[in-house]
Length: 166
Length: 76
Image 1 (cartoon, rainbow over the protein chains, first blue to last red):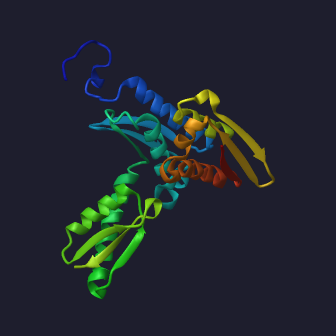
Image 2 (image 1 turned 30 degrees about the horizontal axis):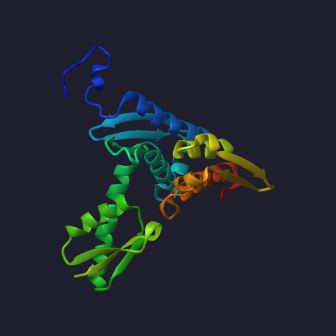
Image 3 (image 1 turned 120 degrees about the vertical axis):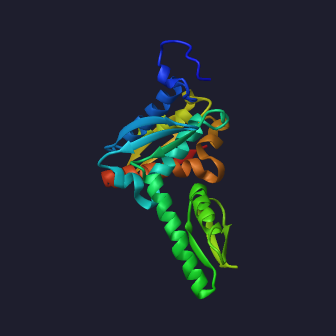
């Protein structure tokens, strides 16, 4: 649907997330950050298929400590409030100055280094527990590496990848 | 932090008017007691306690910043 229906906000024509909904999402993020007394600015961006909320400011280290624990918790809660049972809306992604992209590069590097170790020692190696999205990145990276195979073990927060020589 | 728990709990449940948070201040630890409608209990706890754990993670971050400890208790 690219036909312009009116003069109001023609640039938003293709955004799948309604403006009032996006505003409510941003407001919830702002409320959480304000209550936590964190010094972070919030802005939003609708990128094809996802709604991206960026949090940036002096308290970024606190947000990203422990592999993005606070950022991931906020992301989960915001999605739970606005998306569960209403999956027709795009996924809400919380990011902080390209943290997600940097983390992905870091995980790919980790997969390479860990698989080298597995190949050298010919012994299985378990990685730290990760979120489903992070495990997916690592599994995909490992799938491209010859001589190793990977499998996830454990439940919930403790689920982690083990790399085996194949 | 009472407001934080209230905002999140009210956003999650079906009966926001029944969300009650009481703050019990200790010397170093503040206990936040959350009460919701019995039918909403699962919403604030989540699968394998994931939602409750996320709220606790947020409280942990606030605690680091304010050099305090916040404990979330969900009461039936």
